[in-house]
Image (cartoon, rainbow, N blue to C red; front, side, top):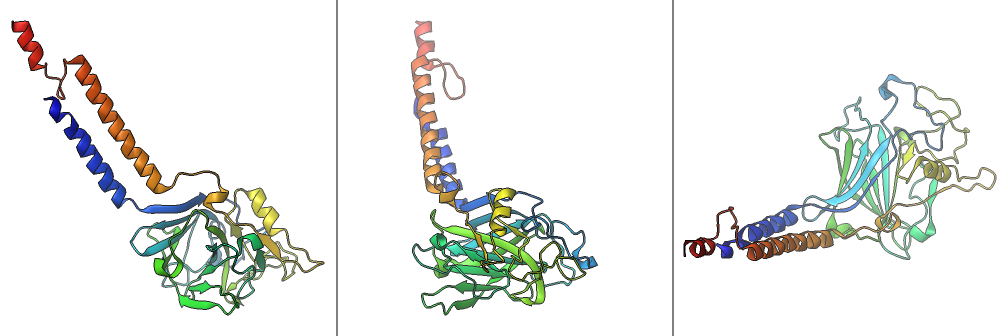
Length: 309
């Protein structure tokens, strides 16, 4: 009977290995504080009925980079709410979302291909490609080149079935497999088909089609929310512009190596397998020492023979 002890252990190992092979790889995932869709503190929704319920539409709650299908990298940005009053085919229209990715060290861009958001980026984490995510077929994959000429390709985007998660799908061959040293700038403004790079203007007073709560200065960020560690960090970043010097607000990225130590996915799977083997080995040793119990709690035949003698 003892030789069958390892059968359940082997079954568990096979199941674990099968499950590990089927488990999608998550490269980076981060929650964002809720209720902070007010720029650097006071931005207000436009008053038109199209923006009802006047909350949640620009409130990023989570950002995730992962691989669900081989050869494709999914960039998921979840919002607290979503409506699509103008029936854009992608399932969203309010969010004018940008994801800037620093994937290569010591190169990239610190500015924007087109102004509109009115922000800049830390030179230490210059971006190498950008996901320009907007409705009505306006989404693009933009790659920064050394001579700043930009490479532009179409980008597949859609609102997922939960009506909260906005997904952009990028072929892995175009950007590579995300590494722990990748860094991400994630920012969202209000979509305006006539706005500069589709960003809706921020003014001092809110109006039917403008965002209120600003200084009436184009220089300030036209950004409602960013992915940041907390609300204080968001406010500090978006308020870092200087009207006197003309300096734009500088954003700071998020990334796995900036968010503390985290085990890679393959190492977590390996540790899980080792744990299963250890449990199986300890179970076998316990049964061997006691000599009284088999896998199904049946008395050992050898013990019965000794008692009969």
